[in-house]
Structure formats: C-alpha cells, structure tokens
Image 1 (cartoon, one colour):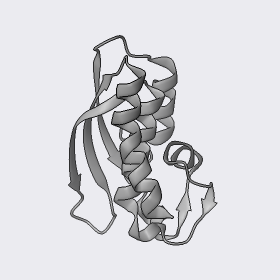
Image 2 (spheres, helix red, strand yellow; image 1 turned 120 degrees about the horizontal axis):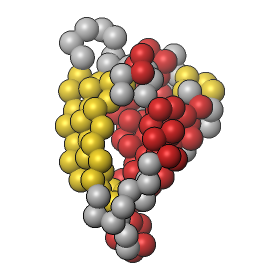
Image 3 (cartoon, rainbow, N blue to C red; image 1 turned 90 degrees about the vertical axis):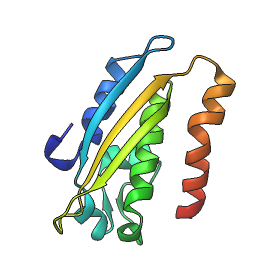
Image 4 (cartoon, helix red, strand yellow; image 1 turned 135 degrees about the vertical axis):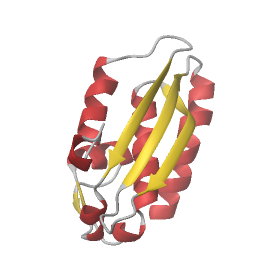
Length: 130
C-alpha cells in the first residue's frame, strides 16, 4: 500500500471490508511516508484513529515516528480481529523519513488471546507517548 506515503486510510477501508476467517492470515506491504508530517507535529485523521491520538497538531511527534507506526499497526490488527505475527521494517535512505513495512496479521478467535496479543503493545506505546 504505497498510497503516496499515507497508507492508513486505505488500511482502514480494507479492515472494514475484509474480515478475516478463523486462522486466516493476511499480509501487507506498506510504504509509510508521513515522516515530514510528524516532523511538523501533525497527524492525519486515519493515523489519529488507528494510533488513538488527537487529530491535528501535537508536540513531540517528530521523535516518535516508529512508535506512531507501531500504534497504527496495533490499531489495524485490532480492527481486523487479528494480531501481528510477523513484521519487517526498513528505513528509507533519503532524508524523506520513509519507513517500509511488511506485516503479517493472523485472525484471533479467542477474546483472551486478542486482549493479550494486540493490546499489550498499545498499552506500552500509549504510556510512552504520555
């Protein structure tokens, strides 16, 4: 999902329209190019929704790009009733602050497993942004 560097709106659409079946896995290749926006302490609506942040300008986002991406991935997984089972990440070599991600999500059918899997990262990262 290159989406001109802002893949989260498309990710939300996929999450809403493509529920996973029991035991099913889905993979995403994501180009996350919102680094300049984070440098200026701004977030888009989809990022705010997935990462549970206030929309608009927030101080300190420029130092938290990877944390914001982690929170978006957790939010996406939760919306799909899944957990992240594999993840690959690379940084762009230019000054554009781009991250390239490969992720695999797997459907979670047990509520206790869902709470233990996807939410644990969200709690840790929410605390780090406070």
